[in-house]
Every structure is written in structure tokens, then in C-alpha cells.
Amino acid sequence: MIGGGDEAAAPGERSGVTLKDLRKEIGAAAAELTGMQDRLFEAEARGRMRKLVAESFGSLELARLLQVQLEYLSAGTTVTALDSELALLWWDSHGRNGWQVNPLHYQLVQAASGPRVMMVMRLDAPQSGQVRDIILSSLKAERDGLKGMVVLDSRGLRSRPENIKFGSYVWYDQGIRNLAELIRTKTKLSLLHDESPGVLPADSATEVSLYCGWYSVRNYVPSCRLNGGAIGYHVASFELVSLKNPTEKGWCAGLLNEGAAATLGPVAEPYLSAFPAADDFFPLLMTGKLSLAEVYWRTATTTGWMMTVIGDPLYRPFKANPALRVEDVPARVRGVLTGGSTRPSTGRAQ
Image 1 (cartoon, one colour):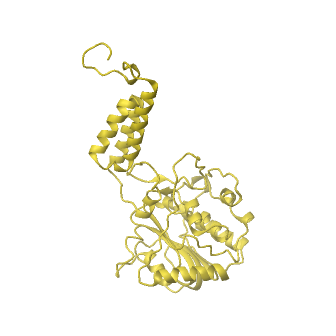
Image 2: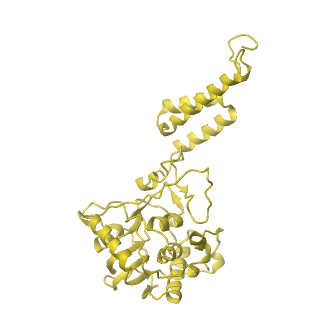
């Protein structure tokens, strides 16, 4: 003790305490803290963590811990999809208010020492036997090549390129138009591209392999008749609130019942930027170089949020017959395939 009285001395000032003793104490404290990372929901555990950090690591680390706990307890938008949370299984802790930036996104470089993210997908369906059909149709399409036309349903929203902001309606609509132009000029795939404000009416196309459109919230319209192995998603909120409810009208259930092998959607209101950009997702998919899980997780901007992907994670629909050459993939995302670096892009002209 220093100075007498009942005040506790700092660890390095305690009489008779050796460096070896300090290392042992700090190691024990660190081990205990690690063991409590998944117990932040317990008030007792949070209090014990604060006490350990204050005693063993000092005021600066205590301030950092307090910030982590405040973010964890912060009220606000905490609705998330189980699958998206599972992707962060190896993270010690993270805030529950809002999303986390996806470290696997092609514009980011995840440090080797950074938190690991699992490429989580779900094999699920509205009806018994459909998961088996998803797997079998995926295997067949991967073996024989996915066949059929592409259907894109944009809304005719336009603005000057310099005025298009990431996450805006015009931004997503322009991405669908960019994809349509890429398919027209760089592939041999048949294309139906509708730019009218409304959703394509029922039975607008048959023998469809790929679909992307918007915006009809929780109101599935059977615009396309899908081929086996087809992949498609509709950009709208609340489309994966349920798969099992027999009265469910969301697009995820609708597309799966129509025969889609893979789709994606949100469990609540995810904001538009949570959807993979159409002209990022589909070009990577059409090269046949990446699995479905890799395509999604390299183009999704968020995790710990509301999106869920359904399908065989290893499915490569264009493995046998690539529809797009690597050199024709938009430059901003091509590095995913070539191993080169990518930098954030302000526009979508590439």
C-alpha cells in the first residue's frame, strides 16, 4: 500500500508484486473478459466486465468498454434476421441498433486480424419437399447450364449522373438499367426489360432464368414462369416476414412457390441500400466463377441486419456455360474475380 489508509494502490505500485504476478493477474482478467463477451445481455456480467477493466487495464480501456456497452444497449432499430446475425457469430460484440457494414463487400479489404464473417445462407421453403427440389434443380442447372431468359423490371426513374446518390430510388433503378445494357451488349441471353412505373403483369414471360424487379410491397405478382434453377429477387420491404404462413403474399414465398432455386429478401424495412445492387450481383453470378453465397456476400453492403438469402450456398448456375466473360464484368467489381483491389465508386456508369 502507498500513503496508508484504505486506498488501493495501482497494480504496479503494490508492495511485493512482481512483473510475473502482474502478467498472471492481467492474463486471468483478459481470459475472464473473453468468457463474458457473449453475456452482454446480463447486467451482472456487464458490471463485472467494467470492474475487471477498471482494475486491470485502466481508464482508457474502461471508456472503450463503456462505449461498447452503451451501443449494445441503445434502443432504436433492433429488428434483424437470424441469418444475418449468425454471420457475426465470431464477433465478440457489436451494437444492436442498426446494421453493421459487411467486411466482405468488394469495396472493403478485411484485415487479417479483423472479425471473421460467415457467409450464411438458408435452405428453406414454404412447402414440404421444396428444399429437396431446390437442391436437385440447382445441381441439374449447374451440370447442364442454367437456361432461359432474363427479366428485369425497372421503374423509369432517372436523374443526371452527378445527382444520383447511393441508396436512392434512382440509384437502384439505374443499376437495373445498367444490368439490362450489359446483358444486351455483352451476352447472348434473351432479355425482357420493362421500364414502366408499374410491376410487370402476370404471365409476362415464360422460361425465365434470372429475375430482378420492383416495387410491389408484400404483393407477389406471378410475372414470370421460371425454369428449374432460376434465381430472382424483388426489391421491396417485408418480403420475407414469413415463408410458412399459407396466406403469405410476399415475393420470397411467391418466387419459391413458382420454382425459384434461390431468392433473397428482408424481414422488415431494410432501406434500399441493403439490397445488393443488380449490376453488381448478377454480373458476378453470370461468370460462373463464384458460388451463390460468394456472390451475395461480396455484393451485400450490410450484415447484422434484415436480409436473408435462400438457396444452396454452393450453387453456381453458370458453371457449365458462363454467360458473361470476366473482362466484361463492370470494372469496379471485377477485382473480386481477378484478385485485384477495388476502390469505392461514386457512380454506376462502369
